[in-house]
Length: 446
Ligand SMILES: [Zn+2]
Image 1 (cartoon, helix red, strand yellow):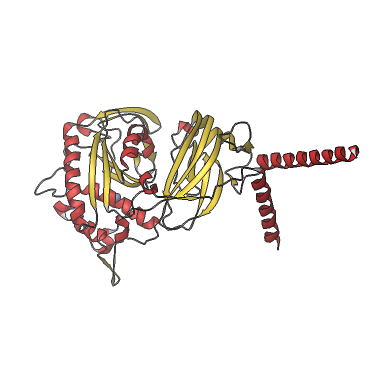
Image 2: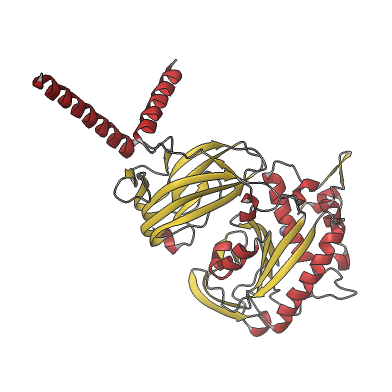
């Protein structure tokens, strides 16, 4: 009798021990259908961490032993043209980005695209990361929890946990909230012909006045040119803190990217849910002999600030240039650069939503030309109203693009929670998830 109880007890203990072992192995080596994506082998260690974790569940740890790009990712089915919000908790330790870059770090992204949340570097305790995106014309996206980046490499350790995803509701408002940040000062180091040079420059009061006047004109013009298909409401900020870094690419030389002004503008952008952002700058002043950064572009567009259209408005290097000055003979359309750069965003958005639109710079291909004192106004009008004659049809920006604005927090007031990142968190769920997984394996083999 006594022996049997002991035997049974031993049997029960053995079972408990085996289950505990399975649970431990499961928690440590199970990645809940996340894939581990790396750029090169041998530079990243992926683990589930039971010591450093945010809540009950083991965290997902990415350790880049060298500058590298790695992520846990999962393919998620989405409905087209829908705003989505993904969040997680993240903790970082000794995260450094290659060349001290501001991109890279720990963040949430859509794999194989530049769409991403802000990123966290250095050593920081657990905090929430939020990533907003629109599915546009996609039916599936691969969400990544990443250390590194699409065009950046990072070293150090990141822990991710508590993933959530929600679907929001797209607003159909055609009023665009625009912010223009005037940066009167730049104070940057740039490399010209292999030499580092310092450029320190200040806008004139005339420059600032020209930007403000043109914004007012732009507000009226864009409603007129679009035949009231959209409207703009804007705010101007003059940021006294200088721009300290510039970005560079082969085609355009030095320019201002989202990362160069993030610290100075992000609180305004988050509080006000802007739909488009302009940054107004002066990079050279030939009259004052400050001509290191002379350039041939006056505006730069089609860029984005974490999903929000982002353009540079550049003061002409030569103060006697009339591009931003109204003159009844020479220039009756001084707000043109604001319109032009905004249209680059509509051009890019249309393509990303799967529409074929003419390239904004192809006006001559469709028989339009720069008409003296009012520039390309006629082209912009037909472009915005889909009235460009082409092979018997009419082309341009599709009307719905005026409602397809960037995703904002307020799109999630009545959101639907999606259980795509749900993790089993007790023994019964773990065992059930194991059975489902084994079942799937058999299905796949057949
Ligand atoms: Zn352009």
